[in-house]
Image 1 (cartoon, rainbow, N blue to C red):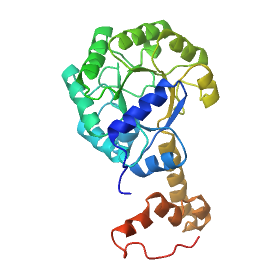
Image 2 (image 1 turned 90 degrees about the vertical axis):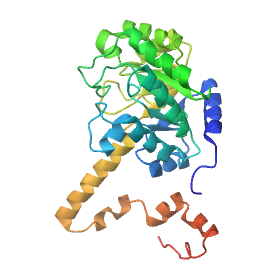
Image 3 (image 1 turned 120 degrees about the vertical axis):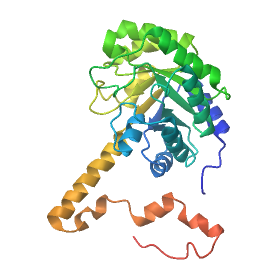
Image 4 (image 1 turned 45 degrees about the vertical axis):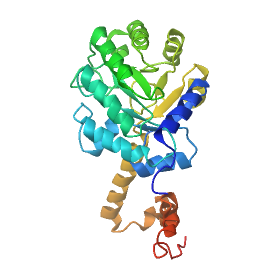
Length: 299
């Protein structure tokens, strides 16, 4: 009722079992705890927590300004509201290898099922923007090795993200991915793949799960789930989509207030009060206090 009753260790175990099955797992991006619960209610396999969304939620650009404390706190708020596994974006790990190690243990304590560490330099930028720079292979490998060495739950997923495709090309991306797997990465997030053939090439190059980022307005075409499944992708994320849709709707609603003076014309686009109360399990809180839920909601 208050939070998920499934322990984090069990979420991780079940997640790793499903990932090992080879099926394609869909992880829409949650922009707050309530949206994570909606993702679960709609039947998806997991929840993704985007660094870009966390930054935007604070009114900041996605250039590495958020801290481990902020990210872990928001990750905990989201993860504890759903029985689904939640993967969180940890940017470059918030520092040097020892900082990366602390990041992993902090995210474990926050109840996350996994995270990804990338090979960009700081200050970083969105993976689908031009002008990115990546660290050398030795630095990238040390980040992942530190992450793998630090975890206490073997089922906590250590994913390595590489942004090198946009910098040095596909051959370099494959070489970097292999080195990161050798360093201990459980999965690979090849950022900004441009074609299905590139995903297929990455799939053939490594023997761990791979992730596809289907973010809008980026370098990758928005491939449907079936096509990604056919080339061997194991996880697909839509990291910022729900935030973009929500903010787009909010902007249009504010314009409607300006133009019409009320929101009557927008009522059919809103989540009804009854739907919200159902999503937060309002009625179940009556178990503790019979005065909490003693009313009827009409549609």
